[in-house]
Length: 112
Image: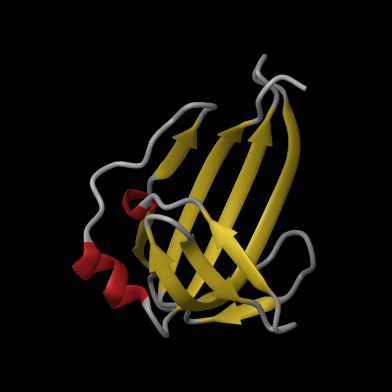
């Protein structure tokens, strides 16, 4: 799995409409690590849900179990097929069985 690095001003890579469409209706488990401009880790977040939309404008939009939507960056290169198995969220201990896709992002927050 590739970790995608986003920094202020980054633009998405080429958009592949076919790959984006293949995500729809599938489960995606994503890990996001947020860093200060100096490289200090300030937050980690894990999200899991069903991909409802995937567009360059909206990003990859998940519907979480709560019913809320959560938008991920429009970086298809960060998403890869998941190996079958149980994935445990470090933040909650929740077990996720056989997600379809995995993604990780390292995001540098802009100066406040």
